Length: 211
Image (tube, rainbow, N blue to C red; front, side, top):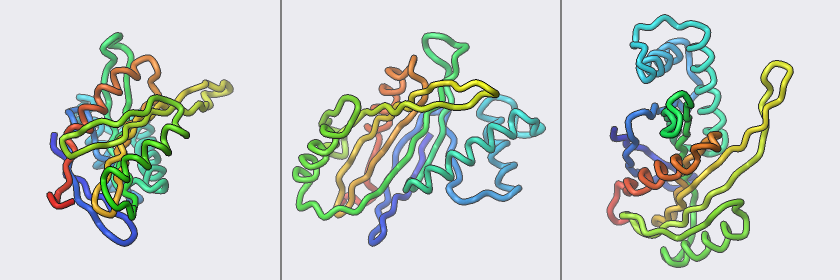
């Protein structure tokens, strides 16, 4: 699947593209009305193999609301693009995996790519709660940082502890730095999600070759 995505910052706009594997669904960033809700529900049903004309029952409605809420939170956090992917664990086919892709476009006045990489590497090595490395992508060098954030969710009267894992490629462009993040709450299969993320990072391209 090819997804052409537009990233933005306050004063300038950068276009880029990337490839996402089958299993990902683009999320709406604007508030959705009833028509868009039904469209999103149909897309989700199709992704789950239920058929686009599947009746929206409580389970499908709740899943659609969850995705719409997740997309709204991502937009509020600065994401210019959000996609949700659904997979089965390679270790246990009965264990589902959900991964999110978000793109963040930030203005930067770095004088060169090397300067940007050095600054990103220094910042993330001092703040990340996971491995940090400089990698060479087809588009150029990037700083890839992993982190884990503990949290919890309420399930009835119980509280379940979760951990949100994230791996982000910070990619310098002209007057901009793009953060391409893949996140998941699936700790057991995080290594597989990391492999998936690296595959996505390798497909990133700036639309303007001069960027």
